[in-house]
Structures are given as structure tokens and as C-alpha cells.
Length: 210
Image (cartoon, rainbow, N blue to C red; front, side, top):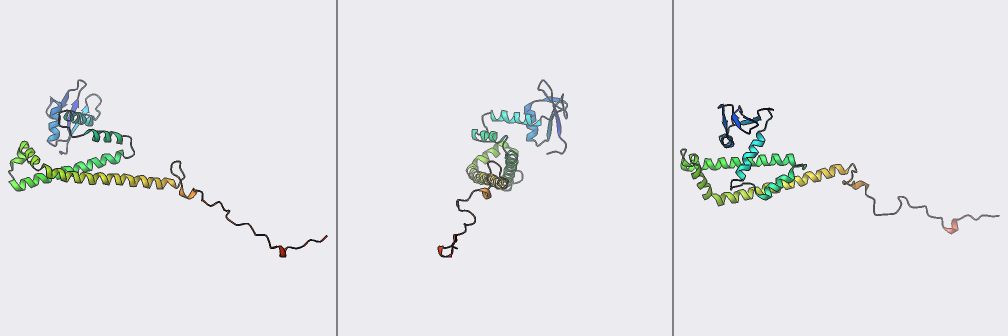
């Protein structure tokens, strides 16, 4: 993305104003800027609050309602359940890293297509032809992505379990409620620590005289 952000102001009437072109634009225009890798900053024209995320989420919502959604019901419900969870911050970073890896994979596929069809490959200039190429390679790519996602999911679940186990072991030493201290558990034996002294045998007892 470009170093300087392109400032877009949003007015109370919900109109978007592009300060670079000095004209009003639509949400579709903002989407096009994102597709062109233009770094944008959307701010409230009155309060100067950064509302970029809300505008981007609005674009995603319209795309998801357009008939070809990327997020299934299960994915959306799982994301919602992570809000307020102790793993929320880790989950956001996890999704971001995986999306970066997916983008790198996409770039490698494009480079491979260029190496096969040459630098002037129509695939790089025609999105429809690129889509057809991806559909042709769909089964192989799907299998590769399925294997990767399964490994990535298992890795995350294992990492979450390890963190929970370490937390439990850490706090158990303080005897907090819910984290029993193994050293404080009573022993099964009810015998005293030192046995009582045995009585002397009868023949060794002293006789008392009156």
C-alpha cells in the first residue's frame, strides 16, 4: 500500500467525500480503492473520529449479502464466541497471519501462471480468465487448502490447550479457588506421624511395696 493515506470524510448525511479528488464518492468507490491497494483513512467530518473499520465492515456486509459469501454460519458463530474471551487477542493475530499466508499462496499461483503463459499472460490482465484458471485448478487447490486449514486449526487448538494447562499449573501453587494445590491434598493414611511408645514387658515392671 501507499505510504500516505487517502483521506475520506463521512458527513452526517452518510455521504463520503474524497479529499484527493475533491468529490463525493460511493461505498463502491471505496471498495475499488481497497482493491487497488490504496491505503485509506475514513474519518467523521464532524468529530474527526477514525471510522475506517466500520466502513470496511459495511463493505464486507454488502459483499456477504451479494450471493457469494465467504463466511459460513459456523465461521461467524465461532468468531462471535471469541469476543470477550481470553483468547480474543490471540485469535485476531492468528486470523491475520493466516490471511497473509493465503495471500502469499495466491501470489505464488499467479507467478506460476506467468511462468507458464509468459509475462504478458492474459490471466494477469483478465480477471475472468484468472477465475476460469482457478476453477480448472480448483480440486488441487481445495485439497491443499483443506490440509493446511486442518493443520492450522489443530495447531491453534493445541496451543490453546497448552496455555490453559500452564495457567492452571501456575495458579495452583497459590491455592486459589478452582485451582487446587496438589501439595495441600490430605494423605490417604490416617496413622500419626510418630508411633506411640510401646509398654515395657511385664517382667521388667517394678513392683511397688507398701
